[in-house]
Length: 249
Image (cartoon, rainbow, N blue to C red; front, side, top):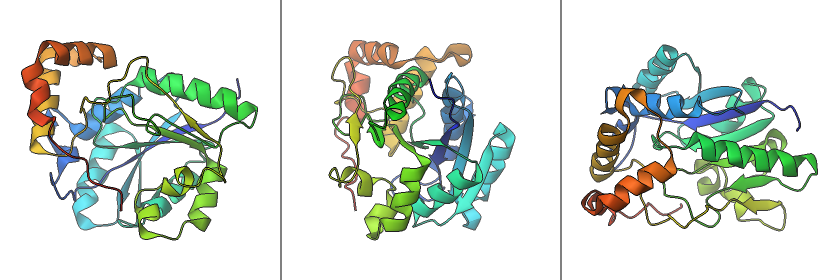
């Protein structure tokens, strides 16, 4: 397997229209951002974690939290998140970039490693530019990850022009399948109707209940255990199942 520097870049900011300051909310004694970082640190293939936040004063809280957690923090544009990712990746000398958002406190490190193994194997043969588990949803929302090499990030940084392409980082890749080798990563079972992301108060209630019941003494729980808990507690699953994700652009 190629020895490449894999950098996870977590985009985070305090400004959120539906749940302001959500990345600094407390769940089971830790901030949401700390949970995301802790879980990514369980990966066997990730070399570095970088928090990419904005230059706004409000986001100084994220800078301080990054320092407390011992992870690098890069500050850039609030609106042009693509440029923020590009410069964060460049500064960290990333060869493989993993995009994860800070609203995923149940991100699964085992799934992430499986994705990285597949990506690196294909990348050795130049058979992939972008691998994601969101091209066709089979994972719960909240386990989202996108993987691409730095040279592809540099290409889209230079070529993407539309506001939504720069705000959401990767649409220029997956909306141009004629230009890029896209690879989807599918789950062993379709759990796409489960919502484990953090965007609303209802989401916070669900994730808090999962942590309180499953994550005693900082235990890291994985997808299948979370799904089993949700299946056994349909009242908890029902709390946020009517929440609609915001549309692209």
